Length: 430
Image (tube, rainbow, N blue to C red; front, top):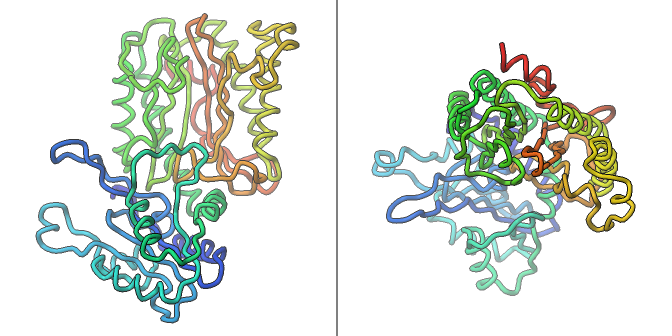
């Protein structure tokens, strides 16, 4: 891995939080992701399942975690299974984790080779009453591929149909949404790498540059700073491309007078950052572009102040809608008659601002978090209002990542990344 080692103390804490929520005589298991094929003998780069990484720090395929806090054998209360390495694997793929390295990474004392799993599993199931299975419960999940976890669950349910089955995801949704100090430091690192990429771009962008050239500058800077790369598929959208919310082609030439909306950010140690900035191709905003830009920036600042403990995200988004409606009136994009006659299910402001303002962020860009629960200290959120005006040929979105504090304003993890219109212009023309 490119990132620096992470102390196993983080993963020890995470497991303690998880098992404290289990019913008595309960067993939980977690599998690594598959390595997915492309065609012939090609595969996609391996990406670890975030749940097993959260609980162990192990970033290797074919790893399995067992958690059974009431096991009669103390050494079986936490078991990590890893792929046995050998000379052949070391030559062709690189050496895998040894047992001692797996313990050092995860803090799990009992590490066994994967070929021992079936025998240990059968022994443990004689003591188990409840089995916690890990099904993807994220509100945005649309999974069509059967995962390694899915196959394991299917086999367990078939072989042990008499057991009571519970789901791990509701527990993980809550504990993963509140970050430990070490996690905040890792997210900050991802944000700092993103800052380096953005600052690299400002003097680089000129009329005639291609969107993919901007993407290339970013990936260079990210990898140079020990990131694996983009935290999500990058959006580099010039001109009217910015009005396609998930534009990812990044294949157009940037023209004089246009704006470029860039929703691009680095990951670090599997933790995400999530940044959006909108900059002028020519280095200067027009008066109209700056007027809209400043309106979006004002909304972002006001929205940030609302992210405090006790707030419910649905209510928060309703308040942002009021701010956006007022701004669109001031910009002459809406009129009072339209607002008076709006559909409450799709308010008038959504013609120009269709998405939400904030989402949880962490190991996943759209991270775990139960939206009906009140916001708590040490949750990390994006703040990303936007105004999209196809008829004027541009769209503007601005986004930072913030940490909710016990009292006072959230801490902006991206406070050092330029955002004010005049600062952007100065840096592009210096």
